[in-house]
Length: 279
Ligand code: SNW
Image 1: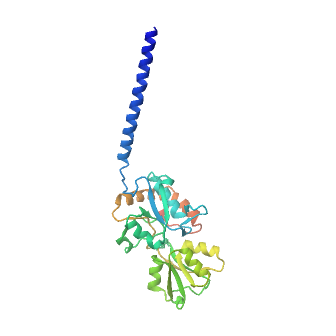
Image 2: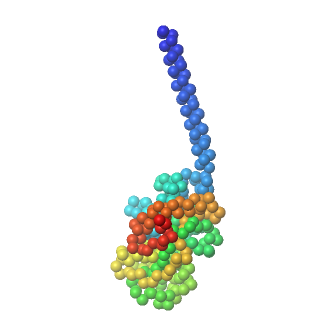
Image 3: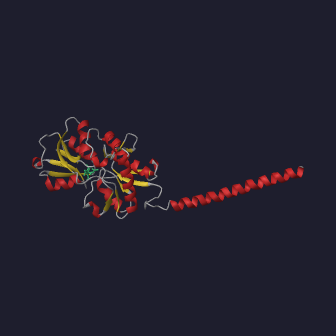
């Protein structure tokens, strides 16, 4: 009887050991399998993180809030899209940069993607690839001078642009006035408010935001930029990542997420049918 009990204890103990050993082995195998499946399908700099180059002052597209977190339409849309690829919010790391540095940084592998209302153009596609478009609108001049309403009317005036933007390209080609280049919106609007420049040429929703904030400023001119819809910028040839982003983006449009975010960040701005749910 006593012996039997000892034996049972021994068996029980051995079984426990075997189960524990098996668990350790399975765990190790589990990890190995995970590492294999996680074999960096999107060619990321770090397979567990999406590194996003962006701007801190392109409100309401993308900007840093009071706590230093990146938010805005583009930021929230990209986080949602990344979520559909299996990346949690904390695995999507935004870094603010001057606009002019964004595309070169993606091309050189400093960021996996750039997200900042970046319009798709043939010229830009020579150095980087773009996802499908997710936003199309106007380039706008803000000024305290309502006369700055045409290319010609800028003659003799100083107009700010952010370096590297479509505004810069348009201004160089069409505006009669002097073009003054800035690294970001903040520095340009500071110059506008202290009289160093007469107008600032930026994206429509940012323009709208500034005229709400500074009552002396008005939007004086809008240039359609619907032929250059904003897309997510990825390294040239990273088709796996670009196609996965496209699929997730389509899903975000189809289930109404895009619409919800657009209504939240750009209230009152019309929404093109192509970005809205089909049904
Ligand atoms: O081409 C437009 C697009 O139609 C939409 O209105 C969003 O802005 C644009 O992509 C133009 N954005 C500028 C650019 O791509 C400036 C971006 C920025 O300042 N962050 O150069």
